[in-house]
Structures are given as C-alpha cells and as structure tokens.
Image 1 (cartoon, rainbow, N blue to C red):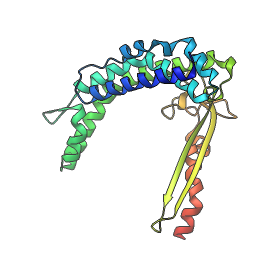
Image 2: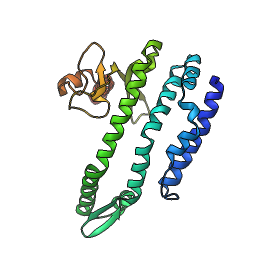
Image 3: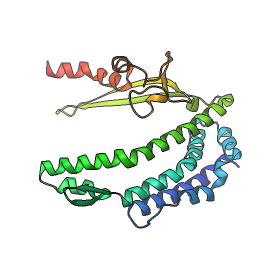
Image 4: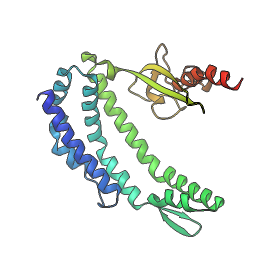
Length: 244
C-alpha cells in the first residue's frame, strides 16, 4: 500500500464515519454502526498500513493510523454512548425531559431555580450512567494507544513517543490591538495511569524533567509549570500596562 492509497482509503472511511455520526446524532438512525464501517476499511488496521505511514516519513500520518486502530477498539463504546444519549431521560419536578433536549429546555426556561434543578438532575444522570462508560472508553483507548506507542518505540516516531501540550491566550483591546501569548509543556506518556488529581490526560502525562504525572503533582506544582499558566502569565505585562 502506498501513502497515496492510504490517504485515499482513509478519506473514504472518515466520510462514512462522519455520515454515521450525523444520521445517528440527528435521530435519523436508531443505532450507529461504526464497527461495520471500520471493518469495511480493515486494510487501514494492518501492519501494511502502518508501514506505509512510516514510509511517508510523516509523524501526523503515523499518528492518524494509530488513532484509527484505537478508534476501532472503542467503536463499540461509541455506539453505546450514542444509543444512551438517544434514549436517556432526565427526571425533574415530575417531568421527563429527553437528555438531548435539555440544552434547549435550559435556554428557554425563564425560571432560574427550574434551570438549576434541571441542570443538577442532568449532571447526576451523567455521573451515574454515562461517566462509567466514558471511563471505560478512556481506559480502553489509553491501553490501546500505549500499546501501539511502546510497541513502535524502535521506530522512534517523536510525535508518538513524546508530547507537547500547548495553550494560546489572546487579549483584544477596545482599540482593536491584539496580543497573543503561547505556553507549552513538554513531556511523555506512560502506560499505566498514576495519581488522582487533575483530569483528562493528567494521569498518563509526565512533564519533561520529572518522574511524576501531572495527576501526582500538587496544585501549586502544576500551576507553576502549566501551559495555560504560562500563556496567561505572558499576557500579564500587557494587562498591567493597560490598567495602570
């Protein structure tokens, strides 16, 4: 398989996946069939596809192929989440509000107490029923990506073995002047999650020069190296000049 054939096949698969997301999310299909689509393009899951990506000497292409493999592994969970979203109902004050309709109800409800009650019940429903599924999704995807990353370490593809987290903070003044500050945090991924702090990638990301994950750092330690903190601290002199 050539890199060109790889890209052509991938574009066709993503068109079908996108259409499936739209039809299911819009309620035009009761159940998504992501697994069927991935299996139709099984050639993208082979060693030949990964070899073609590496032959292209493109980190993003290799990363994409690894993402496709991980996507196939979590496809059953994606299907379950969409099915849950279609059928879930939020019970509040004697009313049954479909989960997908909650944002509309919140926008149109004039009573603040009623909005808070609906939002609270939605959050509880998500915590009880959807978050366990999301956690399973995260753990399965993380295990898959870690396996692919560590298994391909001999090929030393930097975009997969090392990471940079970035944030851009922008300030636009009434005069129209714009200021943009960027902050980055370099590090690498680990196989097993560690730590109970933070969220998202924190349990599997170790900042450069350290041995603990960002989930194992204290709030003060994390703030000191945070890519977001660095970005916003870069704007501080500009803000100070404006207000002083």
